[in-house]
Length: 314
Ligand code: G4P
Image (tube, rainbow, N blue to C red; front, side, top):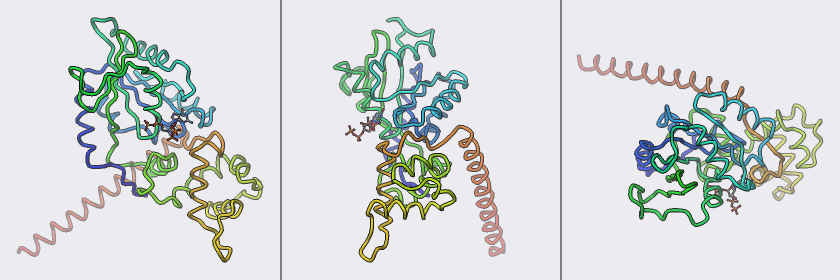
């Protein structure tokens, strides 16, 4: 599925982040706990290479707790990286953030060497909610602080800890196909940039494998009867159950798809995570292989074109 989610002004956001990164000690990336790897920005990973990183797996209230633990272990095993689970119900998020950042950059801190932290995350991941809950009235108004650009916010988390928030920076191409579907299912992608039926079918396909009981429970279907049922048929059953029926008795598939997506996003289907670390490794490997094949095909086409030109020129 091709998702158009990289608007033109992103190059400006990329430049702003690159500029800000120069004097940043710790990079916080907010991930969606239901799709940690799909919601991680590969461009940020490259730009922030070598900097300590804190991954916040946010919306953990919506994710499968056992799988969240798997992802926390996966990130915590990486060098210079810490991961914490979080959700909007957290009472004192700033305390946990500051403690983790201090551990990641033990040489910073104190008024002489304030700890500077950057926070990034895809749209809808819950960044504003977190920042609002931490900031009270301590947000530096944009543009009125030396060294803080117009688009940035600076939040004072402690006397010697500053958090910078720059406008969202997306990445140009979603390489892992499953990652694209998961981003779309989570609500991170605008409605116009995706085909809801296709996204709902991919979601159902995954739920039938890992969360069949939850799916059946939500739509009062028989879990055993769903065994071996293809995604499209399950979508029809859901549509029928929910009264998404057109005149003549045909199932309104678009409506059924919207129901499935909305229920998943609101956590009505249950606590669900759309990817496991082991799965992600396989998807990523396949995506790299596919990209290599496509690059080789492109190269072959170019050579053929060149050859034809040369022949024509003789
Ligand atoms: P953003 O700045 O990263 O774009 O995201 P924002 O904070 O605006 O949050 C996006 C949506 O996610 C909001 O819901 C917000 O309430 C919800 N949200 C944020 N953090 C959490 C969390 O930890 N758990 C859950 N379950 N939801 C969270 P909304 O429906 O768009 O708006 P609202 O009416 O709920 O405010």
